[in-house]
Amino acid sequence: MKIKELTKEIESLAPLQYAEDFDNVGLLVGDPEQEVSGVLISHDTTEEVIDEAIRKKANFILSFHPIIFKGLKKITGKTYVERVVMKAIQHNIAIYAVHTALDNQYFGVSGILAGKLGLVNQQVLIPQNHTLRQLVTYAPLADAEKVRTALFEAGAGKIGKYEECSFNIKGIGTYKPLEGADPYIGEIGKRQEEPEERISVIYPKHLEGKILQALFTHHPYEEVAYEIFKLENKNQEIGLGIIGDLEKPVNEKEYLKKLKKDLGLNCIRHSSLRGKKIKKIAVLGGSGAFAIEAAKASGADIYITSDIKYHEFYQGEDKMIIADIGHFESEQYTKLFLYEQLTKKIRNFAVALSETNTNPINYL
Image (tube, rainbow, N blue to C red; front, top):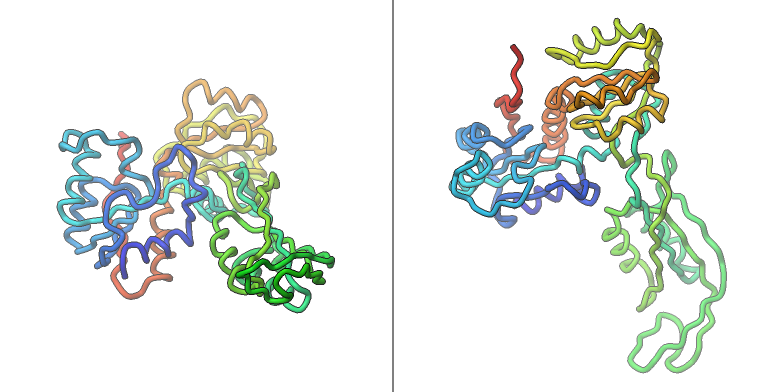
C-alpha cells in the first residue's frame, strides 16, 4: 500500500475538509507515492517517537498533533520541530496529522471523552458552519429512481437518524440538441420537451466529489443539469465539543473526585462550586476556553476542558463550574482510538501503538 492509499483510509475517518482554518493537518512530511512498511500511531511527533519508529521499522507516523504548525523558514536543527523534521526526512519516515479534522467529528476527541464519562443524549456543542450542501438535478422519469438510488449509495440524503431523504417534483424539461451533440432523447436542431423529475438531496461537503461522480455515471444525459447550494443548516454530526447528560444527578464534589479517579488525573483546576448537583455536562478535548460561553448557553452544570487562564475561570459565574483537567489528559484516549480504527481498516502491514509518553507537562 502506498502512502496516498493509506491517507485516503485515514481521511475517510477524519476528512480534512472539517479541520479548522488555523490548523495544519494531512501529510506533513513524506512522498505520497512511497510504499508503507509499517505505521506508528502517536499523540505527538517528537524525536523520541521518530527513534521508536526507526526501531519498529515503521516509515509512517500517524500523529494526532501536527509537528509543523507554523511555517518553517529554515531546517537547521536549531529547534525541536526542525530536528524532528530533519530526522524524519533522513530516515524516509512520513508524518501525518489529524488534529482538528478528528476534533470536529461527532465520534472524535470530545465524543471519545464524553463516552468515557458515560454521557447520554449527546449533541455537538458548537456545530461547524457551512458543512452541508444541497444538490438539485433533473432526470427523465424512467431513469429518476436509478439516479436517486446512486446518489443515496454515494452518501447523499442522510439527515440525522434518517437515510435516503430526498424531495422530488415532476415537471417538463426542454432542450435543443446542437450539431455534434449525442442526445439520449430527441433530435439535432429540434426542441425536445421531456417529462422529468427534479431530485433534491442534502449531503456533507466532504462527499461532494463522490456524489457528483455517482450523478455523472448514472445519469443518462450527455450534459447533466445540476445545481449545488451551500446551506446555513446546522450539522449535528460535525463540530467542536459535546454536550450530554449523566444518567442521574451527582453531588458536585463527588463528581469531581470521580472525574479525577476515572480519568487518572493528577489534579483538576476548577472554578468555585455552586452547591448544586451536576446533571448536564459539556466537554471539549484540548484547548477549550473559546467555548466557555457556548457551554454556559447550553445549560451545562460543568464544562470539562483544558488550558483555561486565570481570568477565564470567572466566566462560569454562578451558572457553571469550569474544570481544567489538562490538555494531554483531555485527549489521552485519542491515540488508542486511532489505533483501533486503523487496525480495522488495514491488515496488510504492521500498525503499532507508540509507547512514548509525549505529554510535556509533569507534576510534582
